[in-house]
Length: 432
Image (cartoon, rainbow, N blue to C red; front, top):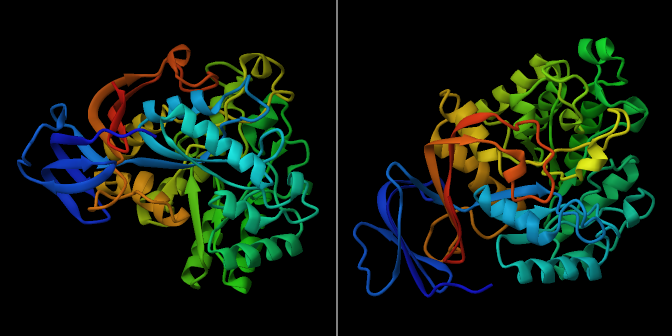
């Protein structure tokens, strides 16, 4: 990835929770690294980026739950289009899930992903390897080989690790390697053929339901297994109020458990299935949109610190795949370009969280949970910066998204807050 020799980000409010910095400073990036944060830094021939009035300079945002679809599903997304979507959304780095075709369960696929990311030259890409061969849940993949090739965590995302024994072994091996297991929590016997949250709206629309306990039973099991093994389990896309209780229980006992919530799960509820368009497949995701009590529990967890980070679960699908009956449509929505506006509008501007807490949720904590470089503007850190525009009016237009797929439930929504610029390794890769 090429880098600008010297870049000064000038005239913004610098907020870095990792160092406790919050004030009007310049940021000097040299040879791809943060060199200095200070007032009125000498220009000395550097390229200058003037922060727009009211802008906030933050450590580059990191999304640890993204589906880039390549290899094998390039009609949905490619690494090039996915990272273009990422930088447009303010993300300087993404961690990509292994449920590609073929599955990223060995070093060759990991190396392919890293090569394609390098060729795209936009956001940094950190591959996540599969827990089991082919994500079939039968045999543990070669975790050590995958880590050596560049994988930063392991998951069978899209599928649960159904047997407790395999999950225990995965946690034991990942613990020795010093990386987390990311957990898609779902009891297949309770989920069955469900397509929406089990409740009033699914019943009214004649849709098969998925109860919240289908998620929380697995959370409880794997928090217990993390306690047994002493390893780190990270709960992906948490949606049910019972799940957040299980995470709190684990944290109170000193278990190494962290968790994430996606913007759609703290913004929308299953009521959206009924209006304004019934059976809108852009509202179909796994886990499903749940009832208001679950949505409110996710908000409470974000506010009280139980939730460690926000991740998008960016899951692109071609329009033809979504333009079918609700039961037959694939689960998932795109999220990279809508996350920052939603977080600003629904969390920061409503007073639920502070701006530093927002940056912790989207940058500092993702880096810490996944042991990634970045998440700070400390001297010597990667020269990755996101310039936020807290008062920018953003109207989501699905057709204008950089992602190859346009499956968003937020088409036409207007939010207050957005991204002014994204800088990776000292190079401006996106400007609003």
